[in-house]
Image (cartoon, rainbow over all chains, first blue to last red; front, side):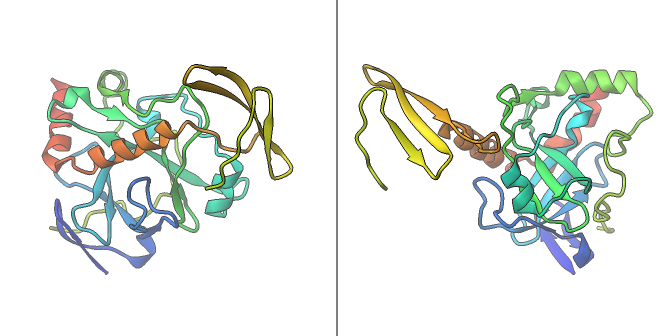
Length: 173
Length: 75
């Protein structure tokens, strides 16, 4: 199927790559279908792109890149909403805000996007841990990570589930 | 919306396992004590509003801002 995007033009994706958010995202409850895209002109971010509204796309990153011991503790109602059972695989992403001065970029650690890999049912889960910031500055942590692991690409992490949404491929523009 | 009047020390029961007690009243502030099963999510409403706000800012990110980050990180 074809997805129209305002940032990356027209993109071909597999229907099986579409993520379903039964409740949408906070503030965007009407949008239920998204896909993960890579920008060929960037090596860091993944974009959570709405398949329904071309202009709606969130830059996201796996929290392990800037919080090495990030703990995803899901509540019972999150698990139930996603039909997620113990041992089943998930992948999580933090929504990033990048202002014009990119050094001030922040990540939302409090409410990650969680993807149930086998069903693709997804949800923005608000974690109960009160120490997690909604706007965590991450530029310095990313820089440190780059110094420590210069050869590891941002989109390839060993810390998280590998059998990833295949939609992580942006068709030719 | 159901509206109930409670005095200091009085409670409201929700279902069989959630109890909200008025712990302190000081001027315009009310302190509430909440007893609920461990799985119950309890947040100040501002948390949800702040997350919505962050989502709305993130969605306005131009792809150029994201592309600039890689260069900045290496500089």
